[in-house]
Length: 499
Image (tube, rainbow, N blue to C red):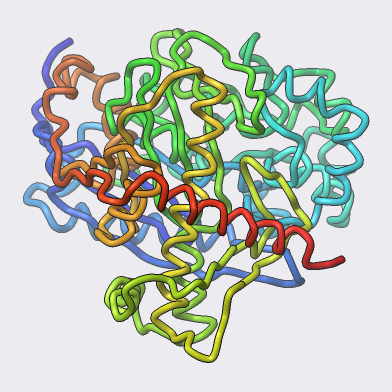
């Protein structure tokens, strides 16, 4: 490939609570960045929605802010890579381009009862085809709900007038001026409509969820020149050459290219993913089997442990209880006490994900005494993130048969040294934080840049990966096991709260 003169890859990182845009140079350095939070809507208990137009407006805003920070602006953008919150479901009118309803967010639990019934009848078949456990987390039941509850949606869908997509598809549709309706294999694999073995939309699954095939986007690799932006976005046409769900992009950005390598991303939720290479590993411990990425038609698979509430518990302490003013304040507050004082916090605000998959569980705090303080609650909240991740790691080791010897970490909460040290202590393996913790965006940039020759090879990128900090276990193994036993008791309370 001919090396391009443009200096940067633009990564659009559309997350659950904010939209970001980051410019990376050829040395993987962040050269400009912008971020904008957007509104979270909770119309009913357990419902979570976003405004698709606000997602687009904030993404466009930060895109332009980031570009304005570098000399040459849009003329220095070689390509665009897109990473996104997965499973969040958007349906729009093909004629008007307008969404028919708010986006139903991956955290939303309105279809939990429907999914519990479906799990009993078709759960084994669906898991075999998709690698997913039947749950309200995934897109299919959300799409089914929209078609059955939004006036006129079913009729329009049957007439081929509606389009469905996760957030990547929506952004591509908007970036291309309504010309393209695409997704990549990673996002497709999270819909519960995609067969991860044949790498095709599955007709039997479409029939189960009563979804017209005409609504679905075309599925492409994670890396390749798929389409170009409308000239109105940048003032010129720019290739969109990388697409991946956020956790898949983070795995790639962490350079976990070999089977057995794993990362954990600490965001709104917490997502541990391990590369299994060309092998599809059928989890026996309630993990998900998913597509890691696809390049040049070659598919890599992964095991994943999905934790629904991680950084969101810190946001709750900030916004719900007012214990802290900013999310960064959580570490200082937690350090005001030497330990959790016997307080355990299970943040099952939207049920429990892997390895429990209990939609009826609810947030629970145990072990409170008159001596409990805000510091104990803050520490328990941070420790809950680590406990949930340790549960996923234990299941991952059992499924893979691999004794895991290192965890690479990224995401906003990975900069919290107290949390990272506790994570290493609890898991009894080293935790490694890279020089760039924005590895979700970095992975999207890498996928885009490799497709156009901005970078020559994956091997070149592996040499650029560097360590910022390493946290080795300091806690005795017996003490870590005792803490885990207490955590398991708290989990049982969260699962039995309604009895």
